[in-house]
Every structure is written in structure tokens, then in C-alpha cells.
Image (cartoon, rainbow, N blue to C red; front, side, top):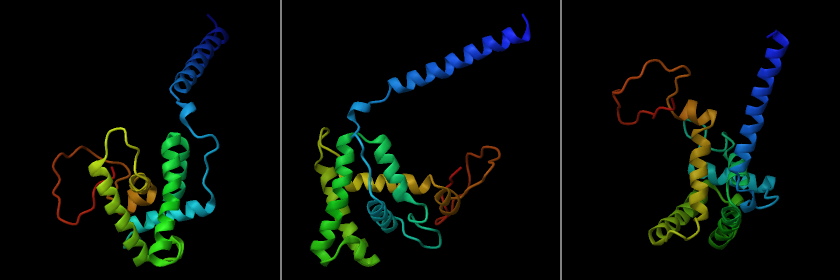
Length: 189
């Protein structure tokens, strides 16, 4: 066998692997349950940044807004959520803004940090009550989705992993027992 024949066979095997892998993965998609053309506006993404910043505010480490968690939420909801959860998430933005207007006579984006925290604490109490009485087939609560995405987006971002958590770029050996003192950061690696 010469080099040209060997390269052709390797290319055929590798091409089949790549094409076959793509077909396998596309077969796993549940595309019929996704909302066609779901997208958020820049204002809604900025709104989500404010919600996330209220959940994880800037302290001695950057907050959720610096990690662009609003963009992360948009991507995750668009790409990974089924249509029902996308709709719940979208309605949640409106519900938070309406609750702010009812409580403070101004939209969520116009309130100060203390008012945002107060409002989201009330929404969080609503979430806890909902989860206590939730049945298996009940839909998700919008604020639960927002909180989960905030935490996932922040702590999987570069800022969250390297500044909010302890981070070692190239971890060494495994140490099963490391002393932990109250107030120490959790490990990202």
C-alpha cells in the first residue's frame, strides 16, 4: 500500500466518523419543542444583568453584571430550554417589572439596589412557597430558572472561577483532605 492509498482510507474513516457523529448528535435534538425564533432584546438582556447583579452583587470581587450573565442566560434559554420554559422565562421578566411598578411606582431598571434586593427577596419567598406545593407536572417558576442560570453563568465564567473561587490554572496532585477555614473561598479547579 502506498502513502496516497493510506491517506485516502484514513480520510474516508475520519470523514465517516465526523459525519456519523454529527448525524448521531442531531438525532438527539428535540427541535420540535423549541420556540421558533426565540430571542431577547438588548433591553431584556440588560434587565437580566440587573437581576443577576442583585443576586450576585459586586463586592470585593466583580459581580454578575461584570461576568455578562445576562448574555449567558439569553444563550442558555435560547439554545437549551424547551418552548414552555422559554415562555415562562420571558413572562418572568415582565412579572418582575410589573411587581416593581406596583411596589415602587417605577420599573425594575429605575429602582435603586436596595429596592431591587427587597423586590427579589419577595419574589424568592414566592418561589419557595411555589416549590413547597409544586407537583411533578407543574411548570418551573421563572425566578428559579433565573437564579439557577445566574449561579451557573457566574461561577462558570472566567471572573467567577478565577476571582470569586480559588483557582489553580494547572492543578497538581490530588489532595483529598485540605484544611478549610470559615470564610475561605471554594475551589473552582
